[in-house]
Image (cartoon, rainbow, N blue to C red; front, side, top):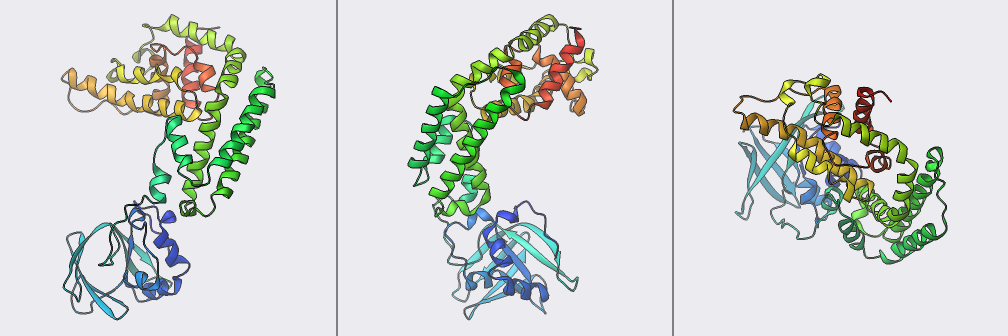
Length: 379
């Protein structure tokens, strides 16, 4: 059977994982008979006990007489379901009415290449289901954390956080007091490797200390812990690492700042081959770019750059509206976006282009734009 592609990432859905492993026999029986398989979305499963009877409720046998009618039998209890306009309606033997929304529908194939349906539904089909007030792993894995305080709060939400964080603080203290940063561009990788290995050790220690926390069954939470540990570390070492980057890249940075000032007000979108649609003020975009100086961690800086990139199209659309033009600005090709960003950078107050962006791995688009500035004024 091919794995269905849905808006729900089934790789991280505990019910889907369970019918692929512990309850595979029931799942294969449903496939073989072309039954309807209902998968509750991940966020609804917090607090649910994934038992055989719970799984049975979600394997629906189509009626041989009536279209869009299905039956599930669980512990001798029969549940009849009717599919109506994107929802499953059920009346249990006790007379309890229940309507469940179908979020998406997929066609899959069994080993005999026969089709059967899979529904992603907004909650379990158990009539006795009650939403848990506890946040599940999906919430912790997908929540966006930008600020240092948010990362600290997340790490401290784990019961056994004190010893791993205390150990990391000791490592940071040793780094600040004893580690020598060799201020040569080709040797900065040594410092990056040192900080990377420190993050790796702290991450492994944190996961081991909290291995019984149910949230860690979701691999995405592992990644969230890594990002928070990295942000925690980079905030702590910023006072030592960033000044060293400033000194190493001072000449390159000052050169780009001077080029940017020279081109300010003269380098326009049309001057670099971008559509006239983008000859407009970029207030919101510049607001985000000018905030780049205030962020310490690479993750915060990346979010800042992401916000700036998203605002480019927004600023252009607002200009269209204000000038009473119809339609939308011409879509930007990636090369045009690079050139356009170069013109916007000349208007920003960011005085440390290279030094701030050096610590980010995903900086190619911005550096390509800085390359446009170099081309416009020969060195």
